[in-house]
Amino acid sequence: MYFDNMFCPRILERSVVIYEMRVYQVQAGRAGEFLKLYQEQGLHIITRYAALEGCWTQDSGVLNSVVFLWAYEDYGHRTAQRALLMQDAEWQGFVPHMLPYLVHQESVFLSPAAFSPLK
Image 1: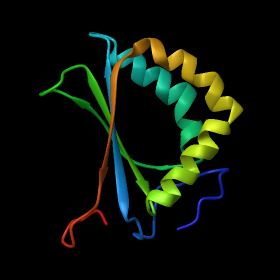
Image 2: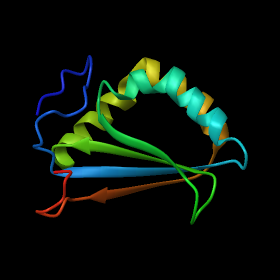
Image 3: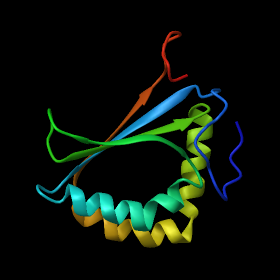
C-alpha cells in the first residue's frame, strides 16, 4: 500500500494489517456541528495521511460519540503517517477549532481475523 501524502484514497488493495478506531465523545447536542466542522475543514487534511474506512455516530453505550475507522499497513506506518499529520501546518490550524467540542477521546487498534470482510 502506498500513501503519497498528497492524497490518501480509500485502500483498494487489501494489504491493511491494522485499523484504528478513534472515538470522540463530544459535548451533548453538538455531534452534528462537530461532524460538519470535521467534514468541511479537517477531512481533506487527514485523508492525505490515513485511509478512512468509515465514520459513525454512536446511538448506544457512550452517547454523543463519533467513531472513525482508519486503515494502516501496520503500527509503523500509522506512527509515521501520524507524525507527518502532526507536522502539517493546515492540520495544526484545524485542531484548535475541533478541541472545544471534545469531552473525551479514545483510540483502539484492531487487527482483522482471517475471515473478516475487512482485511
